[in-house]
Length: 330
View 1 (cartoon, rainbow, N blue to C red):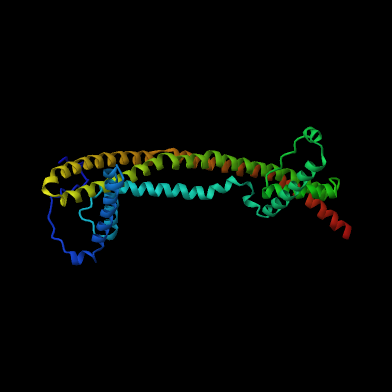
View 2 (cartoon, helix red, strand yellow):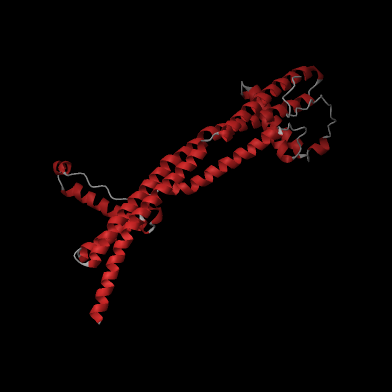
């Protein structure tokens, strides 16, 4: 029998003849499972030309169910290094997935402006009403000649503050000190809001999308190989179980089947190990984190510079108005 790599325990199982107790087998969950699967196998051999493939699949199901019931014997163990790699890969996948759950917030510009949801519903209703009216009242030729509508600005909290401040400035008039202050605030806040939108876009493009690609590519590829190892291991243990219970005339064929399953198992473990190591050693996530910080830093730096210029101007207007107010009360 072929010898597996170090660390993979493959137990040679010599055929053993077991006495059958028909009275106790009816109450034995393992016996019930075997009887049920044997029935499926016999049925498949009658109606399915690929009965051998069916029996192989049922062998995996039988082995898996026995392991869950705790009745399986001589389960092939994986190397400790392999188990450690699995834990590390699961941890890396969880870290990246959990970060994406949060950073996906940047996909929606209105994440800091929940009141905008209600306004959006009203805007959608008004837009649909206007379009219906235009389709009804405006001739097709005139509709084609109409200029395209101007895209709306992002629905963010800062854009909302800029918008209402600008409206207030227009209503009061920029010749009034309060109108001037509101105009300055609206102008700077709009620039800060645009900077925040650029940060959001940078996070989406340089963090969210690359991390999602990593999860879907190298990590998922490694996990697919892990699932294949599990499937082949179940097949190997099922083959060993058949070898233990094989009749003498079928013992040699069952032994060869075990050897083939062992070779497949060792190759699958090696492939999965290499893929897990490649996923864990991939430095791409370091770049993604750096790009995330860079996007945030750029935004906060730009916001700090803009607001630092605005604050002294508003302070000057405030001091002037307080002085005028005190003089008027003297």
